[in-house]
Length: 328
Image 1 (cartoon, rainbow, N blue to C red):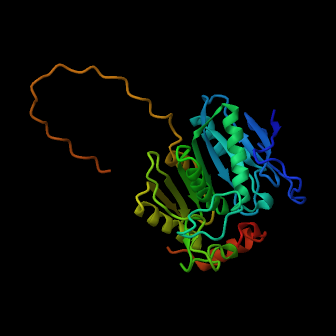
Image 2 (cartoon, rainbow, N blue to C red):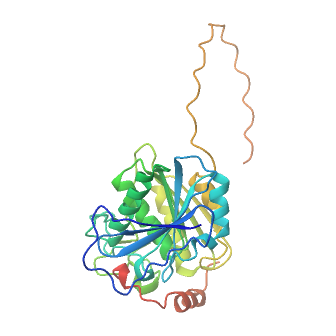
Image 3 (cartoon, rainbow, N blue to C red):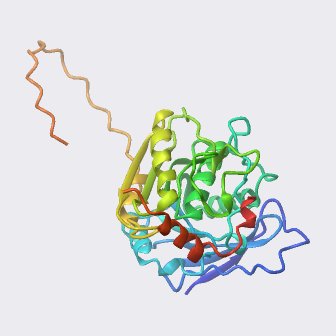
């Protein structure tokens, strides 16, 4: 049985709400699934939340964000991510944007940093309401939050991963991207609705910075070599993120936009495949003995450019819906 909860966010339910958007989150009958309805301070929003019964509480949380024009109406139908959540004991959450468009600020520079205030994006109120719900439930470890997505959902994963880090550096240690990475103005890469090319633009969808806290912020970068300019932005993120001193992994395969998504590899890269490393048991102090000569150390174990036609095809087929809420 899929449960539905209705919540008011900490910022309250605004008197004026979007009259055209209707939340469509669904867990499609997945075990442990529920739809949570909440407010971002303006619109009624929702998440589809799947909590494996076998997972130990409090459990980590993986967000998956849909691409432009999508929704969270098929969250439970993603059998691969549902299986990963059950196997590794984490909650799987599908977010849903208003009218299918994530509200990512357009003006992002070295001076502004990644803008993460409620005045910058409606998604700030949305995600803060979601985090409040997860924390109050007691079943979820809000110090082990991870984000992921594809296309515009990938861009939002990067944006929100950096916002979560700003709000509380201890709550996130990694984010994943697929089929959108990091764009800088004038790089020659054309994305839908001219993302990242506004008059005051510099970066999109976030400003790259070094994180020096104990957890850091790892970028798990995935894409396919036939993904046109999207692939080039993923290559650029894979170049720039570690250059700043941040941890990263990059995985590029054959295929096109948002094709052949390797969910298990994403989960592994994020660090969700095992429980947190336990503190070691105290080891008794040994009695002093003569220092032996060191033994020899063992030898270490050895460890196409996409076509323009592909990009134009994706933009025609998948980006027909308006992208206005991306502030472009």
